[in-house]
Image (cartoon, rainbow, N blue to C red; front, side, top):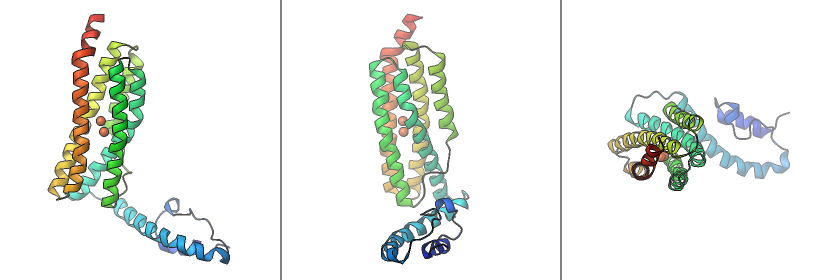
Length: 225
Ligand SMILES: [Fe+2]
Ligand SMILES: [Fe+2]
Protein backbone atom coordinates (compact mmCIF):
# COMPACT_ATOMS: atom_id res chain seq x y z
CA UNK A 1 0.00 0.00 0.00
CA UNK A 2 1.35 3.42 -0.87
CA UNK A 3 1.83 5.98 1.88
CA UNK A 4 0.14 9.38 2.02
CA UNK A 5 3.29 11.13 0.80
CA UNK A 6 3.09 9.43 -2.54
CA UNK A 7 -0.61 10.20 -2.92
CA UNK A 8 -0.08 13.89 -2.18
CA UNK A 9 2.89 13.92 -4.51
CA UNK A 10 0.82 12.60 -7.37
CA UNK A 11 -1.74 15.38 -6.93
CA UNK A 12 0.83 18.13 -6.43
CA UNK A 13 2.87 17.29 -9.47
CA UNK A 14 -0.09 16.98 -11.80
CA UNK A 15 1.13 16.24 -15.31
CA UNK A 16 4.84 16.28 -14.47
CA UNK A 17 6.49 13.04 -15.62
CA UNK A 18 7.42 10.57 -12.91
CA UNK A 19 11.11 10.87 -13.67
CA UNK A 20 10.99 14.54 -12.67
CA UNK A 21 9.04 14.00 -9.47
CA UNK A 22 11.09 14.47 -6.34
CA UNK A 23 11.31 11.06 -4.68
CA UNK A 24 10.73 9.32 -8.02
CA UNK A 25 7.42 7.63 -7.07
CA UNK A 26 8.66 5.97 -3.87
CA UNK A 27 6.02 5.05 -1.28
CA UNK A 28 5.80 7.12 1.92
CA UNK A 29 7.01 5.90 5.34
CA UNK A 30 4.99 5.13 8.44
CA UNK A 31 3.34 7.69 10.76
CA UNK A 32 6.50 7.92 12.93
CA UNK A 33 8.32 9.96 10.32
CA UNK A 34 5.32 12.16 9.56
CA UNK A 35 6.76 15.34 11.11
CA UNK A 36 10.08 15.11 9.29
CA UNK A 37 8.27 14.29 6.10
CA UNK A 38 6.02 17.31 6.60
CA UNK A 39 9.04 19.63 6.76
CA UNK A 40 10.68 17.95 3.78
CA UNK A 41 7.41 18.21 1.88
CA UNK A 42 7.39 21.97 2.50
CA UNK A 43 10.73 22.32 0.74
CA UNK A 44 9.71 19.81 -1.90
CA UNK A 45 6.44 21.61 -2.52
CA UNK A 46 8.30 24.85 -3.34
CA UNK A 47 10.71 23.04 -5.64
CA UNK A 48 7.90 21.02 -7.17
CA UNK A 49 5.82 24.09 -7.92
CA UNK A 50 8.80 25.70 -9.63
CA UNK A 51 9.67 22.52 -11.58
CA UNK A 52 6.07 22.14 -12.65
CA UNK A 53 5.95 25.74 -13.80
CA UNK A 54 9.21 25.42 -15.70
CA UNK A 55 8.11 22.20 -17.36
CA UNK A 56 4.73 23.64 -18.27
CA UNK A 57 6.31 26.73 -19.81
CA UNK A 58 9.01 24.83 -21.64
CA UNK A 59 6.96 22.00 -23.09
CA UNK A 60 4.61 24.51 -24.69
CA UNK A 61 7.26 27.12 -25.43
CA UNK A 62 6.82 28.50 -28.87
CA UNK A 63 9.35 31.18 -29.77
CA UNK A 64 6.99 34.07 -30.38
CA UNK A 65 8.60 36.85 -28.37
CA UNK A 66 12.02 38.39 -27.91
CA UNK A 67 12.10 37.11 -24.33
CA UNK A 68 11.58 33.52 -25.47
CA UNK A 69 14.13 34.01 -28.22
CA UNK A 70 16.61 35.16 -25.56
CA UNK A 71 15.93 31.99 -23.54
CA UNK A 72 16.46 29.92 -26.69
CA UNK A 73 19.78 31.70 -27.40
CA UNK A 74 20.93 31.19 -23.82
CA UNK A 75 20.10 27.47 -23.92
CA UNK A 76 22.05 27.17 -27.14
CA UNK A 77 25.03 28.88 -25.50
CA UNK A 78 24.72 26.66 -22.44
CA UNK A 79 24.89 23.57 -24.62
CA UNK A 80 27.85 25.04 -26.52
CA UNK A 81 29.76 25.82 -23.30
CA UNK A 82 29.08 22.32 -21.96
CA UNK A 83 30.50 20.73 -25.10
CA UNK A 84 33.49 23.10 -25.21
CA UNK A 85 34.23 22.34 -21.57
CA UNK A 86 34.68 18.68 -22.53
CA UNK A 87 36.74 19.48 -25.63
CA UNK A 88 39.32 21.90 -24.19
CA UNK A 89 41.29 19.36 -22.10
CA UNK A 90 41.58 17.14 -25.20
CA UNK A 91 42.90 20.11 -27.17
CA UNK A 92 45.37 20.90 -24.42
CA UNK A 93 46.63 17.33 -24.47
CA UNK A 94 46.86 17.31 -28.26
CA UNK A 95 48.89 20.54 -28.43
CA UNK A 96 52.69 20.68 -28.26
CA UNK A 97 53.46 24.35 -27.75
CA UNK A 98 53.56 25.17 -24.04
CA UNK A 99 51.97 28.60 -24.51
CA UNK A 100 49.14 27.03 -26.47
CA UNK A 101 48.65 24.34 -23.84
CA UNK A 102 48.45 27.08 -21.20
CA UNK A 103 45.95 29.03 -23.32
CA UNK A 104 43.67 25.99 -23.59
CA UNK A 105 44.05 25.21 -19.89
CA UNK A 106 43.25 28.76 -18.82
CA UNK A 107 40.28 28.97 -21.14
CA UNK A 108 38.99 25.69 -19.73
CA UNK A 109 38.94 27.31 -16.29
CA UNK A 110 37.28 30.40 -17.72
CA UNK A 111 34.68 28.26 -19.48
CA UNK A 112 33.68 26.70 -16.15
CA UNK A 113 32.91 30.20 -14.90
CA UNK A 114 31.02 31.04 -18.08
CA UNK A 115 28.82 27.98 -17.66
CA UNK A 116 28.16 28.98 -14.06
CA UNK A 117 27.21 32.51 -15.15
CA UNK A 118 24.62 31.07 -17.51
CA UNK A 119 23.24 28.87 -14.71
CA UNK A 120 22.86 31.95 -12.51
CA UNK A 121 21.07 33.80 -15.29
CA UNK A 122 18.68 30.87 -15.80
CA UNK A 123 18.05 30.73 -12.05
CA UNK A 124 17.11 34.42 -12.08
CA UNK A 125 14.85 33.99 -15.10
CA UNK A 126 13.33 30.79 -13.62
CA UNK A 127 14.15 28.58 -16.55
CA UNK A 128 16.08 25.36 -16.87
CA UNK A 129 19.33 25.73 -18.83
CA UNK A 130 18.99 22.32 -20.45
CA UNK A 131 16.81 21.21 -23.34
CA UNK A 132 18.76 22.37 -26.39
CA UNK A 133 21.62 20.71 -28.21
CA UNK A 134 23.87 23.20 -30.01
CA UNK A 135 24.58 21.42 -33.27
CA UNK A 136 26.94 24.13 -34.45
CA UNK A 137 29.19 23.63 -31.41
CA UNK A 138 28.95 19.87 -31.94
CA UNK A 139 30.22 20.34 -35.51
CA UNK A 140 33.00 22.71 -34.46
CA UNK A 141 34.17 20.36 -31.71
CA UNK A 142 34.09 17.48 -34.21
CA UNK A 143 36.31 19.46 -36.57
CA UNK A 144 38.78 19.93 -33.71
CA UNK A 145 38.76 16.18 -33.13
CA UNK A 146 39.44 15.58 -36.82
CA UNK A 147 42.52 17.80 -36.57
CA UNK A 148 43.81 15.56 -33.80
CA UNK A 149 43.04 12.40 -35.79
CA UNK A 150 44.50 13.54 -39.10
CA UNK A 151 47.57 15.55 -38.12
CA UNK A 152 50.53 14.27 -36.16
CA UNK A 153 51.55 16.03 -32.99
CA UNK A 154 53.70 19.10 -33.66
CA UNK A 155 53.63 22.64 -34.99
CA UNK A 156 51.33 21.93 -37.94
CA UNK A 157 48.76 20.33 -35.64
CA UNK A 158 49.11 23.26 -33.24
CA UNK A 159 48.40 25.71 -36.05
CA UNK A 160 45.33 23.67 -37.02
CA UNK A 161 44.17 23.48 -33.39
CA UNK A 162 44.35 27.27 -33.16
CA UNK A 163 42.25 27.54 -36.30
CA UNK A 164 39.67 25.15 -34.86
CA UNK A 165 39.63 26.94 -31.50
CA UNK A 166 39.21 30.35 -33.12
CA UNK A 167 36.20 29.10 -35.05
CA UNK A 168 34.68 28.15 -31.69
CA UNK A 169 35.52 31.54 -30.16
CA UNK A 170 33.98 33.40 -33.08
CA UNK A 171 30.84 31.31 -32.82
CA UNK A 172 30.60 32.07 -29.11
CA UNK A 173 31.23 35.79 -29.68
CA UNK A 174 28.40 35.91 -32.21
CA UNK A 175 26.08 34.07 -29.82
CA UNK A 176 26.91 36.17 -26.77
CA UNK A 177 26.81 39.40 -28.80
CA UNK A 178 23.30 38.50 -29.96
CA UNK A 179 22.16 37.56 -26.46
CA UNK A 180 23.54 40.82 -24.99
CA UNK A 181 21.65 42.83 -27.61
CA UNK A 182 18.39 40.95 -26.90
CA UNK A 183 18.80 41.34 -23.12
CA UNK A 184 19.43 45.10 -23.45
CA UNK A 185 16.42 45.48 -25.71
CA UNK A 186 14.31 43.73 -23.05
CA UNK A 187 15.67 46.01 -20.32
CA UNK A 188 17.42 43.10 -18.60
CA UNK A 189 20.60 45.04 -18.03
CA UNK A 190 21.92 42.81 -15.26
CA UNK A 191 21.68 39.82 -17.61
CA UNK A 192 23.34 41.82 -20.39
CA UNK A 193 26.17 42.90 -18.07
CA UNK A 194 26.82 39.31 -16.96
CA UNK A 195 26.84 38.08 -20.55
CA UNK A 196 29.19 40.91 -21.53
CA UNK A 197 31.78 39.60 -19.08
CA UNK A 198 31.80 36.30 -20.98
CA UNK A 199 31.79 38.06 -24.35
CA UNK A 200 34.93 39.94 -23.31
CA UNK A 201 36.63 36.73 -22.17
CA UNK A 202 35.88 35.06 -25.51
CA UNK A 203 37.28 38.10 -27.34
CA UNK A 204 40.42 38.07 -25.20
CA UNK A 205 40.91 34.36 -25.86
CA UNK A 206 40.49 34.89 -29.59
CA UNK A 207 43.08 37.70 -29.61
CA UNK A 208 45.47 35.56 -27.60
CA UNK A 209 45.11 32.71 -30.11
CA UNK A 210 45.77 35.14 -32.99
CA UNK A 211 48.93 36.31 -31.23
CA UNK A 212 50.07 32.71 -30.79
CA UNK A 213 49.30 31.86 -34.41
CA UNK A 214 51.08 34.89 -35.83
CA UNK A 215 54.14 35.02 -33.65
CA UNK A 216 54.88 31.43 -32.88
CA UNK A 217 53.11 28.67 -34.67
CA UNK A 218 52.41 29.45 -38.30
CA UNK A 219 55.98 30.45 -39.03
CA UNK A 220 57.33 27.27 -37.49
CA UNK A 221 54.84 25.20 -39.45
CA UNK A 222 55.92 26.87 -42.69
CA UNK A 223 59.58 26.23 -41.85
CA UNK A 224 58.86 22.51 -41.52
CA UNK A 225 57.09 22.49 -44.90
FE1 LIG B 1 32.79 30.07 -23.68
FE1 LIG C 1 35.43 30.34 -25.51
